[in-house]
Structure formats: structure tokens, C-alpha cells
Length: 279
Image 1: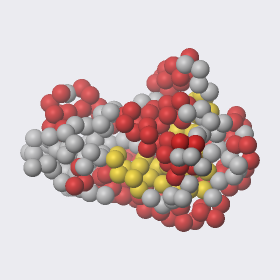
Image 2: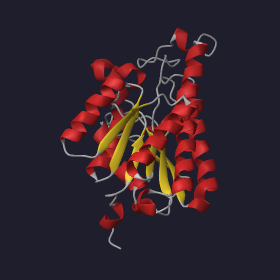
Image 3: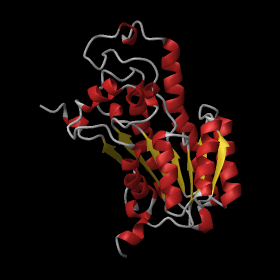
């Protein structure tokens, strides 16, 4: 089989959480551009409808479902609606997440009083774990159930589940909010556990661990404040934060048969941040 043929996903279907903006929107765009039918989900109903209307206007097969991933029944319903619309589920991106609150160090290297373990707002801890970790579990649980019970679109069987983790699940980033680290580390271990469990059903489970991308996460600081982006850029060996389009080839790789012998893996895409700061 030719290499490029293994990237084909035309005729398949994909569900993406957190798809109204950022990396989730890039995932949804990639799936649609490659010929899959896509359900975009997000808690942001306005952004969701705006982006879905744009994609539909470009001729892509898309639908939407407003979804809070902390709502387990809501995740089940979103997946059930997708299966009813498209006849099965081939690909699921468990992507929805957030990073709220300060890290214990500011981009300029100074200490942040509200980011210390004894001063950080516990409500932000609860929210981060609920969305980043439990929300990923809720999404992958619903997807696995659909893939096991009904097979993928067209009766192919199997499927691919991709979780968005973070390089902060692998290394410590002091400017990143404290609970984001254990939440994303938990996602990575959940991916490995489910990959082993679901392998017998030909359901592959992998993770993408992004580093610094220009998105709305963290309040969208890097979009809104050039000084913040410049501070981030200086910590990256490749010299600058990534734009979300740079995620698209990796998303297609994990969604397609090009990665058919890969499960339980984490692919780091962080511009070399995990290697340490450039000299």
C-alpha cells in the first residue's frame, strides 16, 4: 500500500470536543478537509455555530452539539447523536480543556503570589481536574462504548481515539497553572490504560502533547499581549509559539490508517521545549 493512501479518511466520521476554537477547531477542519463527516462539540454555542456554518459553507459535512464535557450523560448523548447521524463513529478527539489561573512564576521570572500551592484558588483546581481529566475520561468512555457496540461507519469496526494532553503532563512549566500538570499527566496515563484495554477491539488510543500554541487557553494572553508571546517565544528552541494549522498533519496521522500499528503512544509537538531552554 502506498504511503499517502494510508492517510485517507474519506467516508469516515469524527467527533471533536472543544471544537469552537484553537486546536480543537484545527482537528475538526482537518477531518472535514480530508473528507470525513464531522460533529463539532463545544460549550461555546455561539463560536460552535459560527465555525460550523463556515465549514458547511465551504462544502464540508458537519453538524454540531453543544457539550460540557464534565456532563457524563451529555457526552453519551453527543456520541449517540453522532452515531445516529453518521451510522457509526470512526474517530474521536477528546480535546476540550482549559488552563485557568496563574502559574507560580510569571513570564518575566517573578513569583506570582496567587499561583503558589497554598494560595491558589481550590475552585480552580476542581474545575481544571473536572474538565481536563474527567472530561477526557467522559469523552473517551462514550466513544469506546460506541466503537465497541456498533463498529465504525460502514461496519469497518475498530476506531481511533485521540486525547489532547500537554507537554505540561511530561515536564514542569512554572508559568502554567499548577493543576494543569497533574490533570494532563493523568490524561497520558488514562490513554495508556485504555489503549491496552481496547486493543482487542481494534480501537487505538493515543495522545498528542502540545507545547505552546497560540490559542485561547490561559485567557488567550499570547493572542492579546505581544509581550507575553515574546516571553513564550524566548523559551522555545525553535524560536516561536506554533499556530494551530501546524497541528493538522499530526491529527490526520493519528486519525488515519497511517498510524494503524500505534496505540498507547504520546506524540510531543512542542518546538523542543521539553529539551530545555535555548542557550
